[in-house]
Amino acid sequence: MRAKTIFIILITAFITVFLVMNTDPVEFNFIFGKGEVSKLVVIGVCTFVGFLLGYWAGRPRTVVSSYDDRFDDDQPKDSLSDEDRNYIS
Image (cartoon, one colour):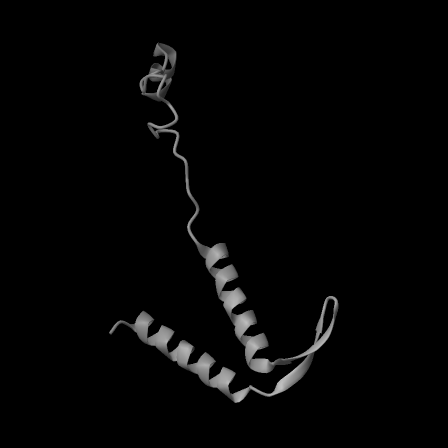
């Protein structure tokens, strides 16, 4: 197995053990009132939302290239003037 796979398995096992150890109910303040919720639910939901936000923030962005055919259908690729070609070379 690769190191990344082992790391993911260890982190998942650590989080699972941590959640199982914290099952007692606690009073939790919601926006519109109070209620008793298990620590397991609160920590689990916060962990899940944290992973989702981390994935969303760290995913690669879509880059639109100026050489992409989808956006330049009506213009020819070689649209430089003679003056521009002389300046470049």
